[in-house]
Image (cartoon, rainbow, N blue to C red):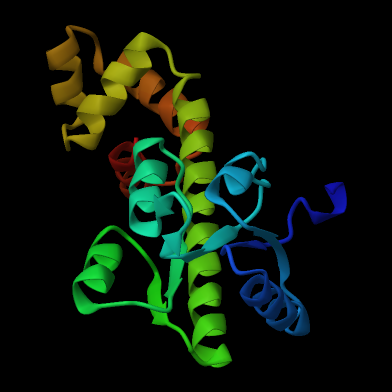
Length: 203
């Protein structure tokens, strides 16, 4: 499994084995890795790989409604882009799914191309979210290197205060503020004030 650590994975949850096999065959044909499950419980027991992934989910499953499962995942903080498929879709159902963050809602029989487009969109979305999480984690790591005083200086600087105003606010000298400011820029790896402001907004 290690060799697949960075490979995108499509999870398919459908109680119809023929549907699962057909979708997996389609995905294999275009070079996408997939795993399929007959129930939501089986899917939940699978550890999610540290790589972009998405979920192709049947709306009507034994014991659980796909829309309810979507909400359960969200409540548990389990974020994964979902492409819904159903043989009995209606407009209110699709609206509810999309409002809750689904990437697409496809009614069987759907075209292979439509499913693949939705899956690629879902994988791209998850990849972007993971990239943002990595960047935020890196920013927090840098921010944690700052001393309490450097954090105070950073907070005032990003508000647009000049060194002289920061010194007045903190009851210290301008030269001390300049030193702290230099440390902040270096530790945060910011090349400009604008970049530091952007970083602070993300934190």
